[in-house]
Length: 214
Ligand code: DC
View 1 (spheres, rainbow, N blue to C red):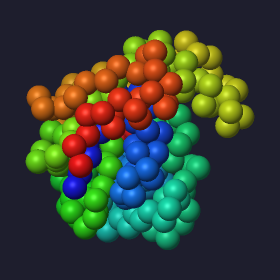
View 2 (view 1 turned 60 degrees about the vertical axis):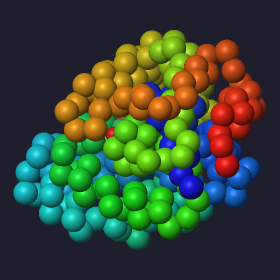
View 3 (view 1 turned 30 degrees about the vertical axis):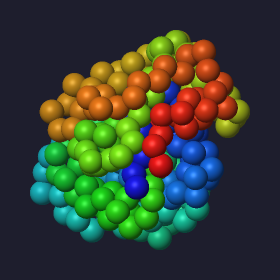
């Protein structure tokens, strides 16, 4: 069984997806981490972020693995490095390249079909798992998403950007993720819509469990 969760940056997808997976005894698939690790690799290789034979070759050779909460790129633990604002931006840019999406698709389906899975991303309900039994679209206002991201960055000790700057970065990322041709961020017609502006994590989970049919 697949529970597909989509939505814009900072809507709380990964937090609730992880908790939901724990609660149900499902695996958790963080598809954003795949794009983040791909972006990090392309950056390290100094590749240009556009469709090219070099990007395709890199993607066909990339090795991304999950172990618990940790993400490994070609054997190296990159869990922290892929969460920086720079990699967030680059992940959004690389995710618009069709060959990148194409080459990450089988990996996502393999994980999802091997076990009961909660998967979060932008195209879970529309492209990767269109037949998922349960689809949820998590949303929140830009202001609230920026506030949460800003607090998250502060907690990590990153004090370089203001809340306004974080809002601007999220806005640009959402516009790019929603307007690309390949698998844009979109609510699947059969996805349940939840706005998390006024809900704490427990309430979001509660609401999701109300809708999910096991
Ligand atoms: O969920 P996240 O913020 O970690 O995702 C980082 C970027 O990766 C996001 O801006 C767009 C891209 N992404 C995507 O295109 N499709 C997905 N299923 C997941 C993420």
